[in-house]
Amino acid sequence: MRSDSVLIPEEEMARQRDLALEVKALPHRPRSYFVVTYGCQMNAHDSEKIAGMLEEMGLLPAPRREEADFVIFNTCCIRENAERKALGNVAWLKEIKRQRPEMMIAVCGCMAQEPGMAERLLKQYRFVDLIFGTSNLYRLPELLLSRLNAGAPLVAVDDADTLPEGVPVRRLRHDAAYLTIMYGCNNFCSYCIVPYVRGRERSRREEDILREAEALAAAGVREIMLLGQNVNSYGLDSAGKPLFPSLLRRLDQVGIERIRFMTSHPKDLSNDLIAAMAESAHVLPQFHLPVQSGSDPILLRMNRHYTRSQYLDRVRKLRAAIPGIGLSTDMIVAFPGETEADFEETLSLVSEVRYDSAFTFVYSPRTGTKAASFPDQIPPEIAKDRITRLIALQEALQRETLSRFLNQEEELLVESVSRRSEEAVSGKGRHGISITLPGGAEDIGKILRCRIVKVKNNTLIGERIP
Ligand code: SF4
Picture 1 (tube, helix red, strand yellow):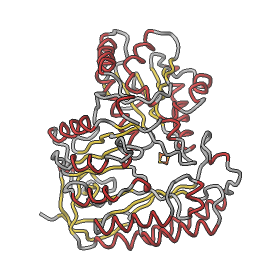
Picture 2 (cartoon, rainbow, N blue to C red):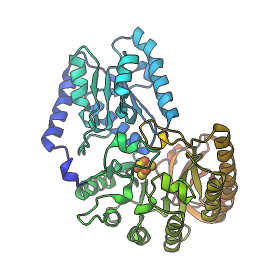
Picture 3 (cartoon, rainbow, N blue to C red):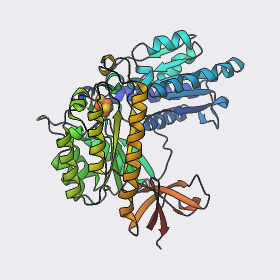
Picture 4 (cartoon, rainbow, N blue to C red):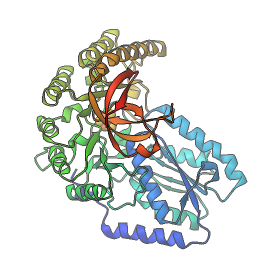
């Protein structure tokens, strides 16, 4: 989809900024906020935008949700568990709101956009003040103002595909930043709810992305993570050719030291993208390439548009062009109709590829998706057995694959003090693998060189190199 057709006009964005100032001037507005975030990086970045807009309206972050005047649940609905957890946490605030009736509660994000969810929330969670979907996020100033001036809960979950530019962002980190390049998804994998709640693909204009990247570089950001549901179909040109490789080549020139991206669809991984990665100085040698299953009949039922051998061919090309590249994946077991033979195909693919890491899931039906109505759902005991076997295999192989880093030099951007020791810090290496090494809070935001001395589960342990 061409971006111009869904771009929110500048006048509308200016109107939202004016409305934010109007909220700020209100004597009875909330003074503090707390955003609870579920799900993926897209949601984490949306929460940074929510925080950015709220701060323009004069709100300050609260240390705990129960102390905030305005609590926003930015939800995920990719799995039923995430949804249940979010609803449980919303319900938990009911009693607090009873004691502090001026507290406001909003539910937004993918779950809010799910068909029928707004009605359910209005009926069963009457204490919720505001419900808004992913397409209406940029309208938060208008929505909050209307809610403050009205007596009743407000819902804004229309499914128009929008592309807002210039939403203020309050970034959680100063050294690394998310940068959304596209929204939505056109793929309709048969198990996935995302196209229904995040709309069709729409790509930001290249000049807007470059401008944002340049501003981040000027602000001292050292790493950017390009975000999109399917980044490698970014900006289809009039001939239907993706423009992601050319975007990467241009971003490589803006002065950001490390560039990462996610998520990619194997069917859109072109030779040109591999070449762009191999040529670039700053795009890191790592690739998250969700395979989901190693069995062709299951891939077909999942509507994934690639075969096992096409997937393996792309892995071979990536490894040939970028030796040592870090590969990670997502896999679903017990998809409806998955036989033992299908599952063994997944095991054999895992043995063949030897991923550095894998996110493994038991299939969970999502109402509204095609696969939820497939008749041949897999019994839970079989699903449990398969996921256990898959995890055991991946962990055994991972120990071997990660041992290729032993005695090698790596480089990490320090993210935080280690959770296990105050005298250690951790961050991601160039290949996308977590590294822990001696250090302290003063190292956060620095890029450090190290030699890998040990592999511990899915983490590399390093020694600093001066
Ligand atoms: S590519 Fe498939 S799994 Fe990924 S968001 Fe789109 S529909 Fe969902």
